[in-house]
Image 1: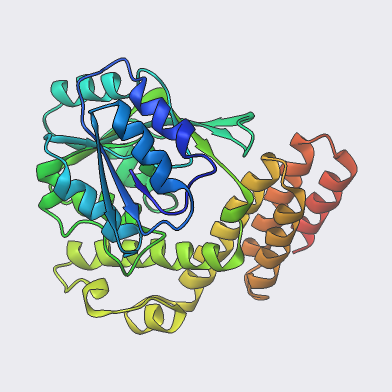
Image 2 (image 1 turned 180 degrees about the horizontal axis):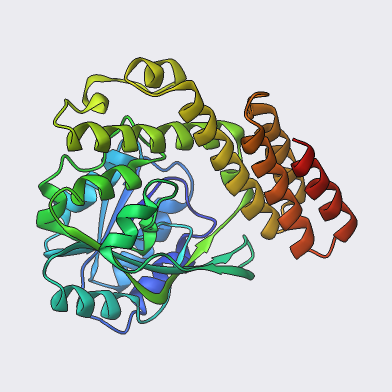
Length: 325
């Protein structure tokens, strides 16, 4: 579990791991240069539970913090965890048993339930279960939830690990590279409560995540065609760089608009109305005028959210906008 300035939700995340039904494990936590109470919280838990291994380092970013955690881990299976989420009690046992029974699987995820900042559950998401279905899903989504995955360490180290160029798409990039040599899978049960909170709902984060996800897919496409991996040749990721390494304008626009729309809908379901409306407006702004289907997609998803929340008039208005797009 990497963490930087995660004091708000850290205790709940740590306790959910320490309370697992599978008790024989090592809990590696990488404190990536925290300046809040994170260090003190971790020190307190480590003083009371010998299973915790806490490594403190100068801030190096999320990908490198995760890589350090894998290097420190001594077990052949590594479960990912985020410092703002909650693992269900049987999570490690279920995934450990699955990996023992499926030696060809390099990484296994699971379903997630969504919670808001206060811990209120507001939805659940099921991912495709079988390898073939997961591979098809990569075309339009990330079909394994990062903090709900368990990974074979040898499969991880057969790749270059998490890549710093893709800080908010490091997971989809890793799954695609593991899939080059191994099967992927999900279990149907909910493995974690995935927390949605306002700090995640920024336009900048959405754009970086969308561009990174597109870069990961371009990278996988290049490897499949026997071409050099374009991500290896870049230092920082932006729109111009993506276009230079082979993305089209339509691909960039579609990636950004779909990402903004998904976060807008999810933050709206979590109850953060102002953030949701701001992101929907940004998604509409980013949809090219010539792409009627992309604009219609934004309005349809906005209509769906309004309908779920009982705002029938606003839902009807957005549905009308979708037909007129």
